[in-house]
Length: 264
Length: 207
Image (tube, rainbow over all chains, first blue to last red; front, side, top):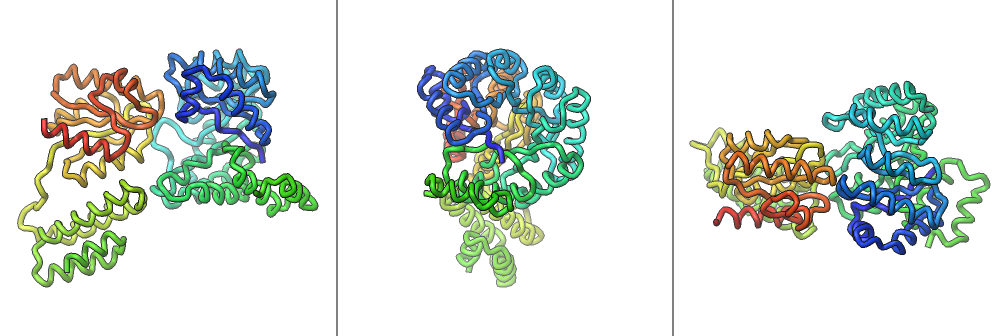
């Protein structure tokens, strides 16, 4: 189960302030903590106006790379910003994201192909978000046809099955699991990822929902997630779920995590 | 008796709400009184949502119950007994953005508070906003957007509405909206949440 650390995201107020004020210490601290907590990638999202985005992204990247060696996940829908940012990275990054939107495929896929990046692929296009598993699979068919045509290996693709808020779409978790299973059946080498917080928007005790959702999704084939690696309970849920999925020989990871104090 | 109806709705008991509605009608209660009981219930639910005691699915269920009760009453109404509307609002998520839940809540709360709301949905081009205002005669426009990519479409939509000289007041809302963004888009105001949106709209109607 791979982890994409989500905290360096300019859509969060505190991070936005740090970016605006060029607060290096804050960003470096977030990067170091997330890396230490076991992130396999650090998501980097400037969250600023497209005019400022390239500069902000570069500033973020330079400061993060100053303190950690963790590969980055460049999070932007703006191809111009991605093109600028990718010049500043030390290690081949993951790109967040492409989708069935023709514009995005056209402009961002070439960047992915050229640099050999991993890429997150959203199961949506420029129309309404597909409500059924079948429709999402149709879009993924299109996207993977495009990634294959661009010589991007299937195992560099991380499909996001789309997580809709369960408060307004009662079966949204079930549809997410079904989508993962359906895509996996068609494309066995493809990976999966998703953010966890959408599911619980508008309901009380969100962390509880996010945690259980993660465990259930792992059982259905989710092999990576965009989450807060500093959330001990969430990280504990991963270790525990892996144990219960028979992935922890002699239960050693679980026992070690317990000794390290991961379970509070 | 109609207090029972209010309770059934505020307690999310859909079957009871319909049962009581029919009983009230059979007893000769005026459809208008029943609608007022519904409105009272919705006010309670709306306030609970504002204070964080009730949640989105309950808002949605309340809306569904309201519709179900209205459907039962409609055939018995001599004429449309809608209470006088405070004003007309056009709302939508701007072009390039498809986030809708918060917008839906604002639309719902505005409707609850007596506004006639036309919800244009998501990914709405500026021209469509202009058209909707012309068609409905709305004097208030609400622009929603969650992504930072929404700022420019908001700016364009505001410009288009001003150019068409429609005399509307425009509010914006969504992710990371603040005074700086409001200034950038040249909107009249921004609201942090549905409560703020309703308060703004009410104030504007007084002007």
